[in-house]
Amino acid sequence: MSRYFGVLLILSYLLGSIPTGLMVARALGGPDPCRRGSGNLGAANLYRLLGRKAGGLTLLGDVLKGALPTVLARLWLAPLGPWQEAAVAAVGAAAVLGHVFPLGLGFKGGKGVATSFGVVTALCPWAGLNLVLVYLLALSQTRVFSISALIAAWLLPVAMGLFSDSKAYLLLAGALSGLILVCHLGNLQRFFRGEEPRL
Image: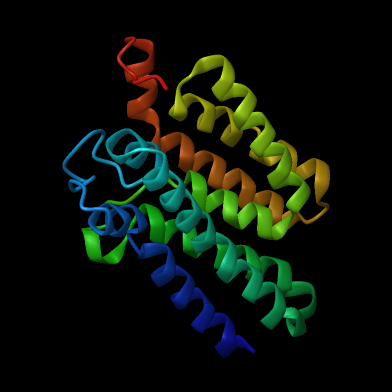
């Protein structure tokens, strides 16, 4: 079973490393998102560059990169007993790290929001649902993708703590929340300068 855990960790990181935004841009004949717009591979930049279809496909792909390995880990690592939740959390974390630090792009990828959401939803659907509602409410008020994502990320540990009693999942939620905050420091600076793009 430890062998499955190691394989899942590696596969989860590699799956997370798949540059969904870059693949969508190339498939739709658009510009390289690494060199245009914000320079980010996330759904928000693809939306700005190529429209709703590109943004939606990128969002879906990035969410699945987090959800699929996490679901597989919950199924395959069940025999680990009391260690299962910690192992599953580690697999989910590997997917997000692959997205943020992809192997094939010089470890410069997305900001982890959608992939983290995929992981969290696979671990605790109620937490994921409530975070979607928070994000949409924040977006309707701020009209800024990055700030809405940050608000949802800040509440990620709260949502996980409310709807799950797993300490391992709560620890992962706190780590993902911190990672997303660090990845968005530039966005925060631009927001306070009034330079962050609005929807």
